[in-house]
Amino acid sequence: MWKKLLLGPRPSNEAVENPLYNGIDRGRLPVHTAIIMDGNGRWAEGRGLLRTAGHTAGVDALKQVLKVAIDLELPALTVYAFSTENWKRPHTEVDFLMRLFVDYLTKEIDEMDEDNVKLRFLGRMDELSPALKDLARVAVERMKDNTGVCFNVAMNYGGKDEILRATREIARRAQARALSPEDVDEKLFESCLDTEGLPPVDFVIRTSGDMRLSNYLLWQAAYAEFWFTDTNWPDFTPACFVEALKDFGKRKRRFGGLKNK
Ligand code: FPP
Image 1 (cartoon, rainbow, N blue to C red):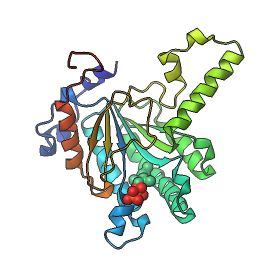
Image 2: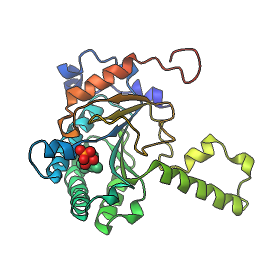
Image 3: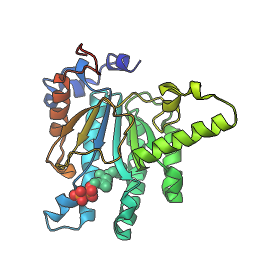
Image 4: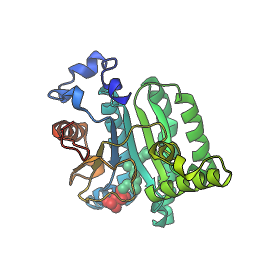
């Protein structure tokens, strides 16, 4: 079903003709790209700026990357905005990030909707501020029937936490005798994850040099290809994204079997 989307309506002429996209094999683009936008703090510190300036610059990088996803009609893009572990940061930084998310949504909702983006959030939204929660709810509702890029923002998200929440939900249903242990299969389990209905992640990009998953989409990225770069997130340009996408197109994917896919 998701593969068909790649063969769906072509992007606008403007996007097709953009020389940035020359050399991309559109039949070999990832279906679900997940990005760990790391290095905002290091980007700022390297310039003698406050870490928060790095997060502000990170918003611009995100806007440009989403634009590429829209132009190339990538079916799904998920970004790691705030992890369940990020609460350990100083209050001032956490508060700044929360305000930045509110500001981002307030300013970007109209354009996202015009671009036919379907916005969604992964993670424990119930623990966020009422302002952020409300804004997110309204934005999701407004874009729920859009058919373009599924843009997922992981906020207060942790892969282990998500798996535990899904497990608890299944245990509750079993306790209520709504299902038996034999009913628990991948399909049922996936229907209890925050990513319900989304395709598996086939490409993970992480910026800023670290090569780890950091509790991100642990279940969904089981067969993902990885792409790491030393570039800090605020410097991750559309050209960097295109380079990564071209590299994905060259990967041989066997999913544990012998044939390349
Ligand atoms: C990692 O850099 C980044 C974050 C924890 C926050 C990500 C947020 C943005 C990129 C802002 C834009 C996002 C949205 C949804 C509007 P870091 O602070 O861990 O950098 P460091 O590893 O260099 O310290």
